Image 1 (spheres, one colour):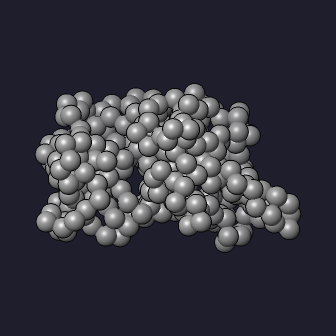
Image 2: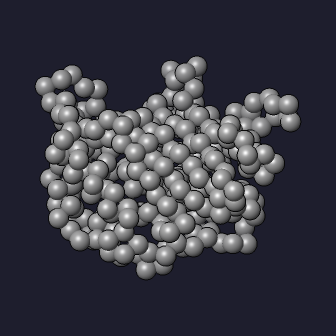
Length: 276
């Protein structure tokens, strides 16, 4: 069983056995039939992944990691909010008439800000500091821009990354306000683990820990049977992750720059309703 499987199982069991149910309360999300989408949740979940030891991809079910990486590059490389720039359809339901998701995600990372060293957007500032000022305790991104929230079709879920260099090792903290455990948890973990590998490689650093902090970690009521069925499975060993070591420019990575050798996973035979 992979380390990602172990942490996923521990988190889900904690939610199911000790979580708070909002059934009977008024909630914003709903199902396609108009029924309120209630959850069982835990507050303040923290999971740590040592990326130097193992790549944290689940095997209890398949994570479509190529699509996850494609979305990561859409946000962090293209800094785009246009769904036409994305290879998958994961954002289609949030697109407005202009074909964008509003001033969200990649749009925020691409806004330039003035510093004494010059003008940088958030991604380029991180890249600059990792190379020129790695001891800094100020290397972070934040896309939860209150000024623009009213123009975002969805408020950011994963909203900040903090990068910290210890010796020759890059560590990171991903902060997330809300996490749907069934549909999004490992998707996000895979994405930001890949980002850590990218940032470390182009900065001449080793990759270390990814710490995932989730404020509201929940399982939707109609997802509970699928989650319970997954937890009864025995997972496989983690696959071998590799990155094209010839790439030294952050913007030269493509989704084909990464490989996952020996990825085994269980088939997932449940229809997953999506909360809106």
